[in-house]
Length: 222
Image (tube, helix red, strand yellow):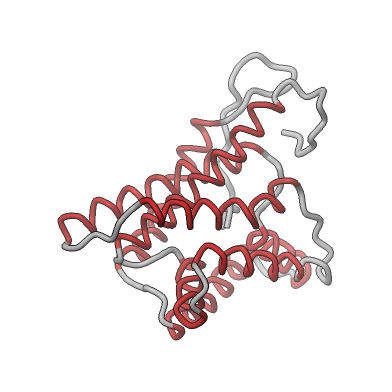
């Protein structure tokens, strides 16, 4: 699929819907994990830790970190797309908006379902966002850029970045727990399923294009 925003592309409206609905749902899913209080996704741990230390909302921290990471694309010669720039702002805004609407929950009877909903919704958001094909998010662009620059595998680069992010976030006070582990185990299969589900038809074909199995270390929105 093309990553262009050519207005002649008959799929452009659907692609834009996938992009922005996916980004909004991604922010909402991260907010649900915050409210569940059982552990966040790796970058969420860092965002929450910095929010705790600075007093800035976690959504605004996400925007700031996304912008900083995007600046790191310059020396590694990565080129952002519409999805990249949109990711910086849309996810953080949706996250803060959801946190304003969803109250804190207490007790495992409420926390576990909310955590499960957050992880599942994150998989839906990932499938929508990636199927739009408007470029990777800032954090994943950093990963692919370092992969190209260093020659190291995607798996190794991604693991190194996320371990560093989780450890730093935890030391700053971010939430690391069962939700973090379950997210790591579930997001790959969920993303693969929803990538297939939301796959858009090719420009010259009337049938739905089924997403092929992604390579190890597949790119996710964050």
